[in-house]
Image (cartoon, rainbow, N blue to C red):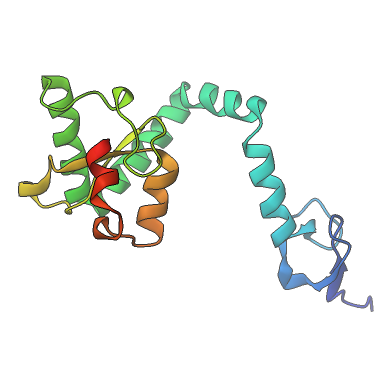
Length: 161
């Protein structure tokens, strides 16, 4: 009877780790990837930033299948976060109607780089749908991921945007 392999050496970091630290992959003899999960994540994040990968994703999103996938993702988001979706739609309509300026004409209220998104700093209730501040994607993600609140920033920074 063949011995069962319970550890494996990662191809990139050269560390020996248990098989639970590797993704399953049928194409390898032992049924697990050659990169551990940590190295695999690092490698995929590096690959995702290449111009070739960005172009292929853009091309995929233009295909019928890509459009269906994007549609499903949008529907799932709208189902999970209806108040956010309605707030985002209200901002988009306000920009189209000229009530709010186009985001490309503004600066991020935190780092003063060109803004790419509006941030609903008072929440997503209907009365606050148009209470937004311009933010770049990096700062906007930082605000939401670390639960930072507007009152933590000096008002002088906000007034300058």
